[in-house]
Image (cartoon, rainbow, N blue to C red; front, top):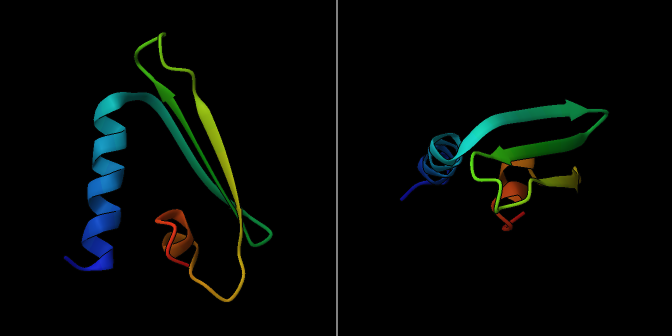
Length: 63
């Protein structure tokens, strides 16, 4: 499976499970926030510093 397909599948899974998703790139910093539908699961925010790796690769933890 290609990296692009992995990213798409992760995003689709997140969308299906979350009520609100925001993805922003500010000054080379990728910010992803997912707010789940279930109140039992707390929302998480992830801040990844963009280096030489593509932010999407860092999102997958392989950058």
